[in-house]
Picture 1 (cartoon, rainbow, N blue to C red):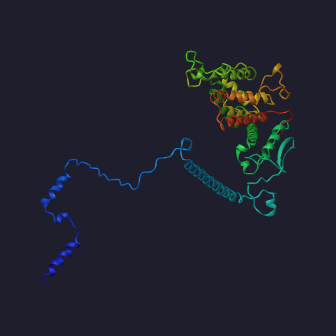
Picture 2: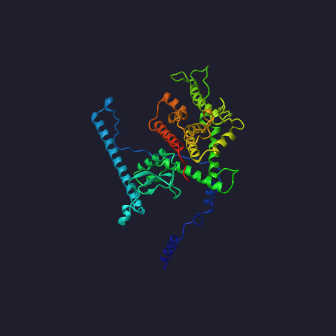
Picture 3: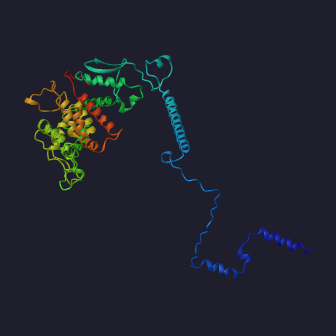
Length: 429
C-alpha cells in the first residue's frame, strides 16, 4: 500500500495549474514585487540579426550601345520593351472588346423605333445604329422643320417639334447637317455632339416661358428664365475678360514680364487695350449711349472695381429687352468668351432684329443687308489676346491650344447662325 501514495500526489500535481503563489515562498516573491513597483528604467538593447548573403554580387548595369555598351544586350532590352508594349496593347484591346460587348448587350434591350426594319420584323435593335436614313428641311405651317425621314425632329425636353423661323434657313440647314453627321442614336444623347440642337431648344424654351408669363398678366417682372439669364450674365460685367488688363510695362525694369514686347514693340497691356477700346467704343455709342465702361482691375489690386452707378441698370434693361433668339445667343457667346461685352458686340453685329442698336441715320433697318465687320475671327481674337500673346512667346501646346481655339470658333459660329437671318416672318411657337 505504501507505493500508491507517491503516484496519487504526482497525478494531482500534474492536473492542477501551476501558480507561483502556491509553490514559492514569500521570501522568493519579494524581489519580484519590488521590481514591479520600481521606477528604474531598464535599458533597451537592440538585437542585431546578422544578414547572410548567398552568391556573388550582381553585375553592374551596362551602358547603351551609343555609349560603348554591348549591342547584343541593347538588342535584348529593345526586344523586351517591344514585347511588353505589344502585351499592353493586346490587354487594352481586350478591355475595349469587353466594354463594347457589354454596351452592345445593354443596347439590344432597347425597344426598336416604330416603323423601323427591326420593328417590322418583330426583332430588337440597339441604339448603336441610327434609325433614320435621310435628313431634310421642309416648311410646315409657316416655319422650317428638320425631319429624320418622315419624323419631325423634336426638342429634347418636349414632344413638340423644333420650329425655326422662315428667316433663318441657314440655321435650319446647319441643324439638319448636325443630325446627318450622327452615326447612331446614342450620339444624339450626348450634348457635345448636338450643340446646335441644345442652343435652338434653349431659345424656344425662353420664348415659351415668356408667353406663359405674359398669359398671367404680369408685366412688372420679367419671365423666370429671362430674369435668371440676365442675373447670370451681369456677373460677368464685374470681371469681364476684355476689361482685365495686365499691369503696364515697368520702364525701370526691362526684364520684367510686363515689360516684354512683341515684334511690333507692343506689350500685352497695349494689345489688351486695343482689343477692348474698339468694342467699348461701339457699345457705348451705338448700343448703350452715355454709358462709361472702365477697366475692372487697378494696377496693384486683385479685387475687381465696380462700374459707375447706373451702368448695370442700363445693361440689364438691354439684356431683358432682347428677343428669345438674341438672348440665347448672348448667353452662349458670353460663356464662350468669358465676356459680356464681347458677346454683346457679336450679337448686335449679326442680329436680324437689331438687338436695340442705333443704326446710321437713326433708321432701324434690321433686316437690310449690310457689310459685316465683326465676325468669328475678330471675336475669337478679342477673347484670346493673352493666350495668343503667350503662344507667341513660349509656343503652342499641341492638342490644347489648337483644340480650345477651334472650340471657341465653333461656339461663336453657332451664335451667328442663331441670331442672323435673311428676313421673313416669324413662326407661331
